Length: 92
Image 1 (cartoon, rainbow, N blue to C red):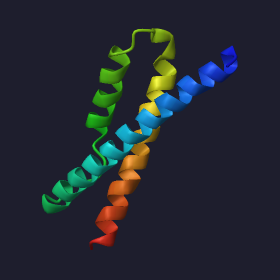
Image 2: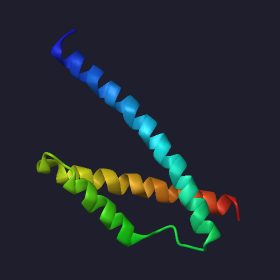
Image 3: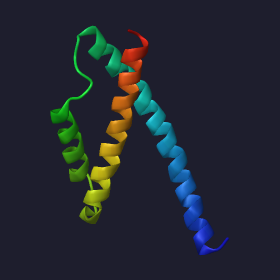
């Protein structure tokens, strides 16, 4: 196996773990959506989103990736908001 193939194998293994964790996150997001529905809370909590991004930027060991981590978490939260919105609309 050459160097490129090894790197790609590592990426595939990371992607497998990311998929598992993202699925777990989405299942938890559905629970949050149910709670918000029961308590008439909005899907968007901008303060929470900002805190999540800041907390994860602070976890970085290599701060050069701050823009990418910001984009990653913002994109992930956009997907989860869509998931919650779909849940709330489907159960109305």
